[in-house]
Amino acid sequence: MEYVDRHDSRARRWVAEAIRKVEADTNRSSDTHLHVFPLPPHWGVNLYLKDESVHPTGSLKHRLARSLFLYGLANGWIGPTTTIVEASSGSTAVSEAYFARLVGLPFVAVMPASTSPEKISLIEFYGGKCHLVEDPSSIYEESRRITAETGGHFMDQFTYAERATDWRGNNNIAESIYAQMSMEPYPEPEWIVVGAGTGGTSATIGRYIRYRRYSTRLAVVDPAGSAFYPSWTSGEEVAAPGSRIEGIGRPRVEPSFLPGVIDRMIQVPDAASIAAMRWVREVTGRDVGGSTGTNVAAAVQLITEMRAAGDQGSIVTLICDSGDRYRCTYGDDAWLASKGIDIAPDLATFRSFLTS
Image (cartoon, rainbow, N blue to C red; front, side, top):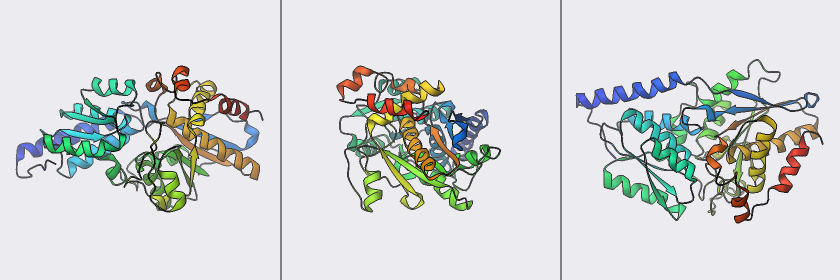
């Protein structure tokens, strides 16, 4: 890790200019849209999708990458010659490559070899280099090795995600949600639904809910094969093979995951995630990725429970990224067949949801 010499006026000026560039990017990017999902009005339950895919780098991870860069710059970990290294399954690396190019630094993404070709192309488009590994669990060790070899800085999203973002406000995603909901029929959501990726988004929203004394409950969804759900339900650390839904789910419980701010966890099978992804496109016309499908599948479950209990209110979840990043995987029927994933039963269930 490179520490910036605070007595070097040139390095200080470079850091100040780098922070200005990152903050200017924030000013240029208006807040993301909150879309109404079309549910029958007589249900008395409203579903909203906060569209994080409209960020400059096309995903929710743009927020995280921006926070991690500001955190590293302000802590003196990133200087004018620092190589930025990250362990990522794709979207975080895409966003970090963008910010690395913005401030003129080299970037290396350490990723599983199974990462979608679309994401690899985006990282390279922004000037980053991709270091692919066959064993997903080795990305941490490989990242540290490359960091040591280059004298660079390992961003380590899985450790720093929960502390790099100001959870009390400062236009974080939680504050944005409540501001956008202020004029809706049910302005304080019954549930906010997010995926378990680094744990940073759920930590930020869960802390903000408690800090602002809202009664909203936080549901965290986890894909099959991930360690978060079995660890949360058992209260013990559990190792897992990892998830096939890119961007969420991990083979281990990451340091940024804060179980104490979560009210409920919901595990979603891969077929349901991908079916919901395609169903959202059919119903809304918005092309979304697999992790958004996971979010919506869990939201449908909560809506069903609310209706059965006679409850009314609102639910907010996230569009994490666009489906164009998964044309060769979740969007390809031949790929699904090769993986033994049959989405037909779940897709039929979702299609009947609005009328049954």
